[in-house]
Image (cartoon, rainbow over all chains, first blue to last red; front, side, top):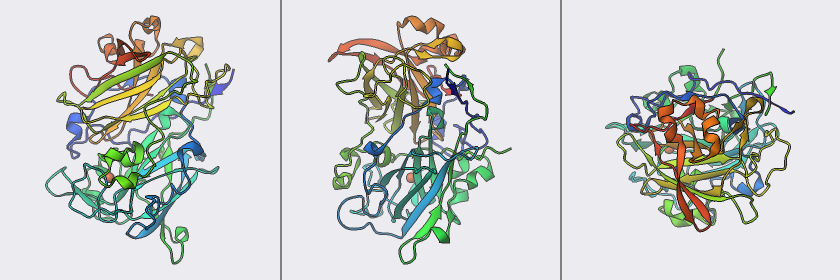
Amino acid sequence: MKKVSQYQPRDERAHPPYVSPRYVSTARRAPLLPAVAIPQSLSELTGPVFGDEVVRHGDDDLTTNAGTGSPALGERIIVSGQVLEARGRPVSNTLVEVWQCNAAGRYPHVHDTHDAPLDPNFLGAGRMLTDAEGWYQFTTIKPGAYPWRNDHNAWRPAHIHFSLFGPAFLTRLVTQMYFPGDPLLDLDAIYMSVPDAAARQRLVAKFEREASRPHFALGYRFDIVLRGREETPMEGS
Amino acid sequence: MPSWQTPAQTLGPFFHQGLARTRQAFQLPWLCGDAVDVIGNVLFNERTLGQRIRVEGVVYDGLEEPMVDALVEVWQADAHGRYNSPLDTGESAVDATFTGFGRAPTDEKGAFSFLSIKPGNVPWLGGLVQAPHINVIVGARGMARQAFTRIYFDADAGLASDPVLSRVPAARRHTLIARAGGEHDGALTYRFDLHLQGENETVFFDF
Ligand SMILES: [Fe+3]
């Protein structure tokens, strides 16, 4: 019988609670009853595997992947990092999906009504698979800040949305990456929905001179840590 | 000791361009190009084994209003109860035509649907089995992080002995069971609504 590893619990200090009073719309959308704890079975310990069928050449360059032939406007940046399990194992070959607004703070989404210009050459979405050591990298432009309706003068700090799978259903993670030194961070109800200050810091990318390409783009490093496997495998099915 | 886990954050209202790309989601439709989404709500192809099903429902908020900006993702076993994952410990063959993963954004009425196949029984610990079920993740603007639940199928013989359902308070089990609604185009239809709050708040799991 093959053995299957269990995962460490979700770290409740690291993740935002559903009810987050400063983030006003959680009031009507947060589950209120306690979650039912269940053991990890094959349903949670397995997860989808994606390959080249979902990632196309050029999907990792958001400055050109709108396919219009003209580059997106804005400050070009390279974002890279390693996807790891909490115990330091790299997560290889896992799908990373990113989306963001343009340099002016506007999404091309039909429901974004912010009065800032659309960029006809910026799709604002990318996809990639991590390599054997868990590394991903994409080229984009630095997103702008944008207002939202949380309170009368609320602005989202510049951010890039990330979606990750990891090896198992229970390692699925959707998060956001922020930029260092942004004065909007401490005012942002979504960033601040993470109760632990050290955990919040893990959402902030680091500027890295070595990750920059001379005469091309500045580099930011954003490592992502998913739930990790426990050391001792348990008896499988 | 800290876990070093990266915190979850909300999907926000504009995830469609990244996760569920359709031309209709764009103010500038050419941006979408031919890059329409490859991970969608149809999980099988013509060679996939198993009973075709259509699961449809609405996601409701605490005021029982449909949520038009939620994302529902599903993960399920094939008709023989095997997950298409290297981590499945079973030894029988996996249906290679079936990845078992799908996603659907809710529409302007808060509705989502999946076309799939009825999963088989899935092994549980200690040689027991779980009744056929679909694993679900739901996320949206206003959900600080995503929530996990399951869809079971009504009238299944295995429901009474399912080890997960038996951990759920009896009065809330109905929130996890999709109701059969007849046949449509060769598929059995099932209705499964999600309620984030209220009298019928869906059971969410922690594992
Ligand atoms: Fe955003």
